[in-house]
Length: 297
Ligand code: LMR
Image 1 (tube, protein in one colour):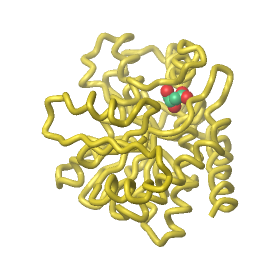
Image 2: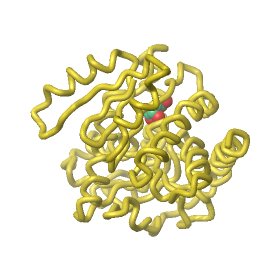
Image 3: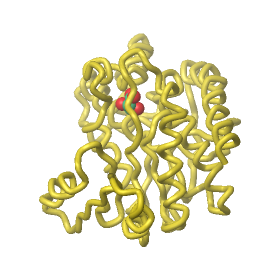
Protein backbone atom coordinates (compact mmCIF):
# COMPACT_ATOMS: atom_id res chain seq x y z
CA UNK A 1 0.00 0.00 0.00
CA UNK A 2 1.33 3.42 -0.87
CA UNK A 3 -0.21 6.62 0.26
CA UNK A 4 0.37 9.94 -1.35
CA UNK A 5 0.12 13.05 0.76
CA UNK A 6 1.13 16.07 -1.27
CA UNK A 7 4.66 14.86 -1.85
CA UNK A 8 5.06 12.18 0.77
CA UNK A 9 4.67 8.45 0.51
CA UNK A 10 3.99 6.10 3.40
CA UNK A 11 3.73 2.35 3.50
CA UNK A 12 1.65 0.42 5.99
CA UNK A 13 0.13 -2.99 6.62
CA UNK A 14 -3.41 -1.65 7.06
CA UNK A 15 -5.64 -0.74 4.10
CA UNK A 16 -4.44 2.30 2.18
CA UNK A 17 -7.88 3.82 2.25
CA UNK A 18 -7.95 3.59 6.05
CA UNK A 19 -4.56 5.24 6.51
CA UNK A 20 -5.56 7.92 4.00
CA UNK A 21 -8.86 8.61 5.80
CA UNK A 22 -7.05 8.74 9.13
CA UNK A 23 -4.36 11.18 7.91
CA UNK A 24 -6.83 13.30 5.98
CA UNK A 25 -8.31 14.57 9.26
CA UNK A 26 -5.09 16.36 10.27
CA UNK A 27 -5.84 20.07 10.03
CA UNK A 28 -2.97 20.75 7.69
CA UNK A 29 -2.98 22.22 4.21
CA UNK A 30 -2.67 18.89 2.45
CA UNK A 31 -4.55 16.50 0.24
CA UNK A 32 -4.27 12.83 1.16
CA UNK A 33 -4.76 10.02 -1.33
CA UNK A 34 -4.28 6.30 -0.65
CA UNK A 35 -2.99 3.91 -3.28
CA UNK A 36 -3.46 0.18 -2.60
CA UNK A 37 -1.12 -1.95 -4.66
CA UNK A 38 -3.27 -5.01 -4.30
CA UNK A 39 -3.90 -5.63 -7.99
CA UNK A 40 -0.66 -6.26 -9.90
CA UNK A 41 -2.16 -5.26 -13.25
CA UNK A 42 -2.75 -1.68 -12.08
CA UNK A 43 0.51 -1.26 -10.15
CA UNK A 44 2.32 0.72 -12.83
CA UNK A 45 -0.61 3.05 -13.37
CA UNK A 46 -0.91 3.60 -9.61
CA UNK A 47 2.83 4.16 -9.12
CA UNK A 48 2.73 6.78 -11.85
CA UNK A 49 -0.24 8.56 -10.27
CA UNK A 50 1.28 8.33 -6.80
CA UNK A 51 4.81 9.49 -7.61
CA UNK A 52 4.62 11.85 -10.54
CA UNK A 53 5.44 15.38 -9.40
CA UNK A 54 6.75 14.36 -5.95
CA UNK A 55 9.59 16.48 -4.55
CA UNK A 56 10.19 14.33 -1.50
CA UNK A 57 9.46 10.64 -1.14
CA UNK A 58 9.70 9.45 2.46
CA UNK A 59 9.92 5.66 2.50
CA UNK A 60 9.15 4.05 5.89
CA UNK A 61 9.14 0.52 4.50
CA UNK A 62 10.30 -2.98 5.19
CA UNK A 63 10.02 -5.75 7.70
CA UNK A 64 10.82 -4.84 11.33
CA UNK A 65 13.31 -6.90 13.29
CA UNK A 66 12.25 -9.30 15.99
CA UNK A 67 13.84 -9.51 19.45
CA UNK A 68 17.30 -11.05 19.07
CA UNK A 69 17.71 -9.92 15.46
CA UNK A 70 20.15 -7.31 14.23
CA UNK A 71 19.12 -4.70 11.69
CA UNK A 72 21.53 -6.32 9.24
CA UNK A 73 19.50 -9.55 9.34
CA UNK A 74 16.86 -7.68 7.30
CA UNK A 75 19.18 -6.77 4.44
CA UNK A 76 17.89 -9.00 1.65
CA UNK A 77 14.20 -8.74 2.33
CA UNK A 78 14.21 -4.98 2.91
CA UNK A 79 16.57 -4.19 0.03
CA UNK A 80 14.10 -6.05 -2.21
CA UNK A 81 11.24 -3.87 -0.93
CA UNK A 82 13.25 -0.64 -1.20
CA UNK A 83 14.44 -1.54 -4.71
CA UNK A 84 10.90 -1.66 -6.08
CA UNK A 85 10.12 1.75 -4.61
CA UNK A 86 13.41 3.35 -5.64
CA UNK A 87 13.00 2.03 -9.18
CA UNK A 88 9.51 3.49 -9.34
CA UNK A 89 10.87 6.84 -8.07
CA UNK A 90 13.67 6.75 -10.66
CA UNK A 91 10.99 6.34 -13.30
CA UNK A 92 8.25 8.70 -12.16
CA UNK A 93 9.98 11.36 -10.01
CA UNK A 94 13.70 11.24 -10.84
CA UNK A 95 14.26 14.73 -9.40
CA UNK A 96 12.74 13.88 -6.01
CA UNK A 97 14.70 13.51 -2.79
CA UNK A 98 14.18 9.91 -1.68
CA UNK A 99 14.55 9.53 2.10
CA UNK A 100 14.82 5.91 3.19
CA UNK A 101 13.58 4.73 6.56
CA UNK A 102 14.42 1.14 5.70
CA UNK A 103 16.64 -1.06 7.81
CA UNK A 104 19.48 -1.81 7.71
CA UNK A 105 19.92 1.86 6.73
CA UNK A 106 23.73 1.41 6.77
CA UNK A 107 23.49 -1.05 3.84
CA UNK A 108 20.19 -0.20 2.13
CA UNK A 109 21.26 3.38 1.33
CA UNK A 110 24.52 2.38 -0.42
CA UNK A 111 22.67 -0.38 -2.28
CA UNK A 112 19.95 1.97 -3.48
CA UNK A 113 22.42 4.75 -4.39
CA UNK A 114 24.31 2.28 -6.58
CA UNK A 115 21.14 1.12 -8.32
CA UNK A 116 20.04 4.77 -8.72
CA UNK A 117 23.44 5.69 -10.24
CA UNK A 118 23.07 2.85 -12.74
CA UNK A 119 19.92 4.56 -13.94
CA UNK A 120 22.00 7.68 -14.58
CA UNK A 121 20.49 9.59 -11.64
CA UNK A 122 22.30 11.71 -9.04
CA UNK A 123 23.09 9.61 -5.92
CA UNK A 124 22.90 12.79 -3.80
CA UNK A 125 19.11 12.54 -4.06
CA UNK A 126 18.99 9.45 -1.84
CA UNK A 127 19.53 9.61 1.90
CA UNK A 128 19.04 7.50 4.99
CA UNK A 129 16.95 8.92 7.81
CA UNK A 130 18.88 8.94 11.10
CA UNK A 131 16.90 11.70 12.81
CA UNK A 132 15.50 9.27 15.37
CA UNK A 133 18.98 8.99 16.90
CA UNK A 134 19.10 12.79 17.25
CA UNK A 135 15.59 12.84 18.73
CA UNK A 136 16.49 10.12 21.23
CA UNK A 137 19.74 11.71 22.34
CA UNK A 138 17.95 15.04 22.83
CA UNK A 139 15.43 13.38 25.12
CA UNK A 140 18.06 11.45 27.08
CA UNK A 141 20.25 14.53 27.61
CA UNK A 142 17.20 16.49 28.75
CA UNK A 143 16.28 13.77 31.25
CA UNK A 144 19.79 13.80 32.67
CA UNK A 145 20.43 17.55 32.76
CA UNK A 146 17.02 19.25 32.82
CA UNK A 147 18.22 21.51 29.98
CA UNK A 148 15.52 22.87 27.65
CA UNK A 149 14.91 20.22 24.98
CA UNK A 150 14.84 22.76 22.16
CA UNK A 151 18.36 23.93 23.10
CA UNK A 152 19.84 20.44 22.98
CA UNK A 153 21.52 19.72 19.67
CA UNK A 154 23.80 16.70 19.79
CA UNK A 155 24.97 15.73 16.30
CA UNK A 156 24.79 11.97 15.75
CA UNK A 157 27.27 10.77 13.15
CA UNK A 158 28.33 7.44 11.63
CA UNK A 159 25.44 5.15 10.85
CA UNK A 160 22.15 3.86 12.22
CA UNK A 161 22.89 0.57 13.98
CA UNK A 162 24.55 -0.36 17.26
CA UNK A 163 28.08 0.98 17.69
CA UNK A 164 27.94 2.82 14.34
CA UNK A 165 25.63 5.36 16.04
CA UNK A 166 28.01 7.99 17.45
CA UNK A 167 26.51 10.94 19.38
CA UNK A 168 28.95 13.84 19.71
CA UNK A 169 28.16 15.07 23.22
CA UNK A 170 31.31 17.23 23.21
CA UNK A 171 29.76 19.44 20.51
CA UNK A 172 26.63 20.26 22.49
CA UNK A 173 26.97 22.96 25.19
CA UNK A 174 23.77 21.69 26.88
CA UNK A 175 25.49 18.35 27.46
CA UNK A 176 28.63 19.88 28.96
CA UNK A 177 27.31 19.45 32.51
CA UNK A 178 27.25 15.67 32.08
CA UNK A 179 30.17 14.03 33.86
CA UNK A 180 32.61 12.30 31.50
CA UNK A 181 32.11 9.23 33.65
CA UNK A 182 28.47 9.06 32.60
CA UNK A 183 29.11 9.48 28.86
CA UNK A 184 29.83 5.81 27.96
CA UNK A 185 26.53 4.65 29.48
CA UNK A 186 24.60 7.47 27.84
CA UNK A 187 26.27 6.69 24.52
CA UNK A 188 25.28 3.03 24.88
CA UNK A 189 21.72 4.01 25.77
CA UNK A 190 21.45 5.86 22.44
CA UNK A 191 22.96 2.93 20.53
CA UNK A 192 20.55 0.46 22.14
CA UNK A 193 17.40 2.58 22.03
CA UNK A 194 15.92 0.86 18.96
CA UNK A 195 16.61 -2.56 20.47
CA UNK A 196 14.81 -1.54 23.67
CA UNK A 197 11.68 -0.72 21.62
CA UNK A 198 11.95 -3.99 19.67
CA UNK A 199 12.19 -5.95 22.95
CA UNK A 200 9.28 -4.06 24.51
CA UNK A 201 7.07 -4.67 21.46
CA UNK A 202 7.87 -8.34 21.95
CA UNK A 203 7.92 -9.53 18.33
CA UNK A 204 5.19 -7.15 17.15
CA UNK A 205 7.45 -4.57 15.51
CA UNK A 206 9.96 -1.83 16.12
CA UNK A 207 9.74 1.92 16.66
CA UNK A 208 6.95 3.42 14.53
CA UNK A 209 5.55 6.45 16.36
CA UNK A 210 8.86 8.04 17.40
CA UNK A 211 10.17 7.10 13.94
CA UNK A 212 7.23 8.89 12.28
CA UNK A 213 8.03 11.95 14.40
CA UNK A 214 11.69 11.74 13.39
CA UNK A 215 10.78 11.18 9.73
CA UNK A 216 8.59 14.30 9.83
CA UNK A 217 11.52 16.24 11.28
CA UNK A 218 13.76 15.14 8.39
CA UNK A 219 10.95 15.77 5.89
CA UNK A 220 10.47 19.31 7.18
CA UNK A 221 14.22 19.98 6.84
CA UNK A 222 14.30 18.70 3.25
CA UNK A 223 11.18 20.63 2.24
CA UNK A 224 12.51 23.83 3.86
CA UNK A 225 15.69 23.44 1.81
CA UNK A 226 13.75 22.81 -1.39
CA UNK A 227 11.81 25.96 -0.57
CA UNK A 228 15.03 28.00 -0.36
CA UNK A 229 15.15 28.21 3.47
CA UNK A 230 18.37 27.22 5.23
CA UNK A 231 17.97 23.92 7.06
CA UNK A 232 20.37 21.43 8.59
CA UNK A 233 19.68 17.92 9.86
CA UNK A 234 21.82 14.83 10.40
CA UNK A 235 21.35 12.25 7.65
CA UNK A 236 23.19 9.24 6.21
CA UNK A 237 24.45 10.07 2.74
CA UNK A 238 27.16 9.36 0.17
CA UNK A 239 29.96 11.34 1.77
CA UNK A 240 33.61 12.31 1.66
CA UNK A 241 33.87 13.77 5.16
CA UNK A 242 35.61 10.62 6.44
CA UNK A 243 37.33 7.69 4.74
CA UNK A 244 33.96 5.92 4.51
CA UNK A 245 31.93 6.35 1.29
CA UNK A 246 28.64 6.64 3.21
CA UNK A 247 28.37 8.40 6.54
CA UNK A 248 25.84 10.27 8.67
CA UNK A 249 26.69 13.82 9.63
CA UNK A 250 25.01 17.22 9.55
CA UNK A 251 23.65 17.95 6.09
CA UNK A 252 22.45 21.30 4.77
CA UNK A 253 19.48 20.98 2.43
CA UNK A 254 18.86 23.34 -0.45
CA UNK A 255 16.87 23.70 -3.63
CA UNK A 256 18.51 20.61 -5.09
CA UNK A 257 18.22 18.41 -1.99
CA UNK A 258 21.51 17.65 -0.23
CA UNK A 259 23.51 20.87 -0.64
CA UNK A 260 26.47 20.65 1.76
CA UNK A 261 27.66 17.79 3.90
CA UNK A 262 29.19 19.34 6.98
CA UNK A 263 32.51 18.06 8.29
CA UNK A 264 32.28 16.16 11.56
CA UNK A 265 34.12 18.88 13.51
CA UNK A 266 36.34 18.41 16.56
CA UNK A 267 36.00 15.20 18.52
CA UNK A 268 37.31 14.53 22.02
CA UNK A 269 39.51 11.49 22.74
CA UNK A 270 36.54 9.26 23.66
CA UNK A 271 34.74 10.14 20.43
CA UNK A 272 37.90 9.67 18.35
CA UNK A 273 38.26 6.17 19.83
CA UNK A 274 34.62 5.40 19.07
CA UNK A 275 35.00 6.63 15.49
CA UNK A 276 38.07 4.46 14.95
CA UNK A 277 36.21 1.43 16.33
CA UNK A 278 33.04 1.97 14.31
CA UNK A 279 34.82 2.56 10.99
CA UNK A 280 35.46 -1.11 10.07
CA UNK A 281 31.99 -2.10 11.32
CA UNK A 282 30.27 0.49 9.17
CA UNK A 283 32.52 -0.30 6.21
CA UNK A 284 31.42 -3.96 6.33
CA UNK A 285 27.78 -2.90 6.36
CA UNK A 286 28.33 -0.48 3.47
CA UNK A 287 30.07 -3.24 1.52
CA UNK A 288 27.17 -5.61 2.16
CA UNK A 289 24.88 -3.03 0.51
CA UNK A 290 27.24 -2.55 -2.43
CA UNK A 291 27.39 -6.31 -2.86
CA UNK A 292 23.59 -6.47 -2.91
CA UNK A 293 23.52 -3.83 -5.64
CA UNK A 294 26.08 -5.77 -7.69
CA UNK A 295 24.10 -8.99 -7.44
CA UNK A 296 20.71 -7.39 -8.05
CA UNK A 297 21.42 -4.74 -10.69
C1 LMR B 1 15.10 2.17 15.45
O1 LMR B 1 16.20 2.66 15.66
O2 LMR B 1 14.18 2.21 16.27
C2 LMR B 1 14.83 1.52 14.13
O3 LMR B 1 16.01 1.43 13.38
C3 LMR B 1 14.16 0.20 14.22
C4 LMR B 1 15.00 -0.87 14.87
O4 LMR B 1 15.00 -2.00 14.37
O5 LMR B 1 15.64 -0.61 15.89
